Length: 257
Image 1 (cartoon, rainbow, N blue to C red):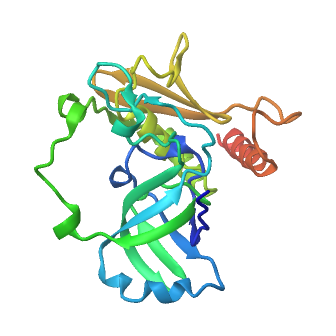
Image 2: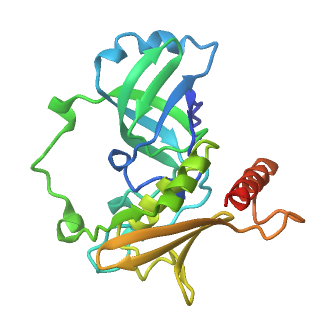
């Protein structure tokens, strides 16, 4: 048996895969890798701060199963792909690889950006990105050569934007959810991204309800609502902290004229 011990853990504000886009270079997420103390790992960071990008090798810690066929978010219309021809996180060994932007190195912390990792991700290794060796612009990309990106522009009402900002201050990143779920082919028939009511489209994330309209290639976010009618019981997998945020949100917006 092969056993790996994490050298550190990523700390960031995004805890759910719905909050992250399909690749790190499409993400605005920031955070830091905190190395495990007592192993002299921090000495291994010497000279790393001279690089602008690094490879992070890590464990998909939220995934416990794998699938031989994957349904990637970008498609050529020819069905599922073999997992080894995709970057699906559902793999026989839950090992991930991301190229992220290096911000700084401070003591035993490596600050990064443009990351698609989730909070508390176990990090197995860090390597420098070297363009001379790691970049092959003329490389063939297989089935991806036939993919047509179906990109949608996202706009917000003033009310929705205010609510997004209110929640971001409380470490709930609905903008990341909206970008990842609606910014690319929201009508993808292989995924149930939202439901349609008589008045609106509704995207659900945990106990939050995101109301929006679609016109041509534009998604207009109308409003953000809490799924709580009362607080007699928790919804879904909400924690006490989640419920407290919903309560603050409802109290604040009900109090506004």
